[in-house]
Image (cartoon, rainbow, N blue to C red; front, side, top):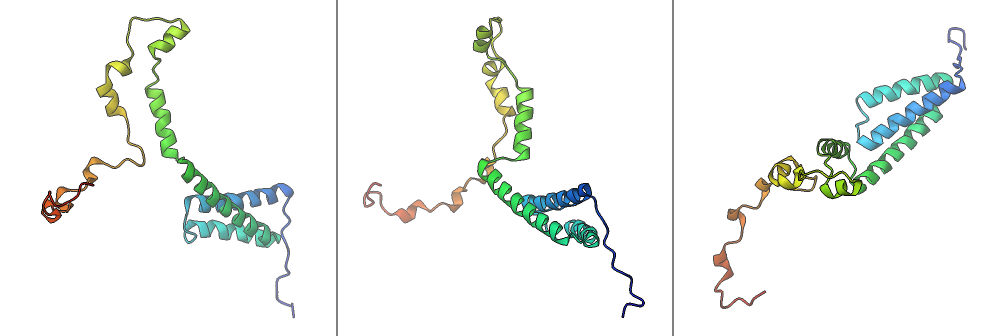
Length: 166
């Protein structure tokens, strides 16, 4: 009995609007997959907004499929970037270091036929340049070394004459 029920009308979307809806679902999924965002907070709000628009147009499958594909692609790209050691911070740091310390060595100047009587700044001031260098991701700080109190006492090794050399 449909006397008081509202008739179901599907909203018509143009091809460009469908493409935009699919693109936004893919980008949201990619961001969730790449950056490992939780799907509870702002992600669920955006996804439910996309779902409501898709439900009105009858394109719920399109949105869910593009979201899933984007999430998988984001996860794959994240794993690839981790294996390659790519990170935005590292790229920005290298870019700034290159801009700040772009020196041309004297051999390169000779090759370009620009001879000057000045020695390069890098070779002259090694101490200053060492302060400007940043540690890489895998370098441990010097404060994290194993303390002497955690090492095995030498007394437990026994007499030195009785222990074979290793």
